[in-house]
Image (tube, rainbow, N blue to C red; front, side, top):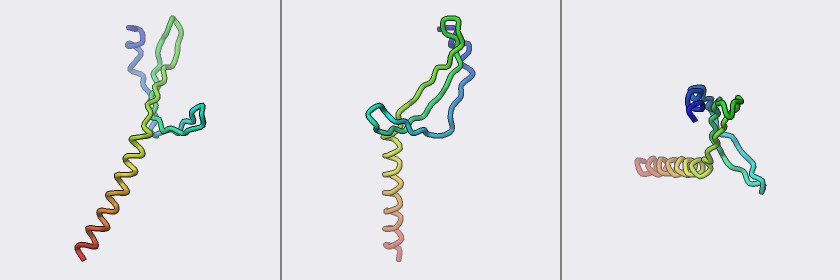
Length: 78
């Protein structure tokens, strides 16, 4: 584990959310990070994918609600 920690400073984060298709065909939004490590004496890449589908859907819903409230606010001011 100490070997992995010493090489852990080389982290690549992708700047966008990726669409991942599950085995059953469903699509999920994932954020990924990749770490160059040494495992059992061999160079390897550890990739972590975090499912952010629900968060993405919640943000879209919040943006839609905010837009509706802004329209209602404009109507109320008129």
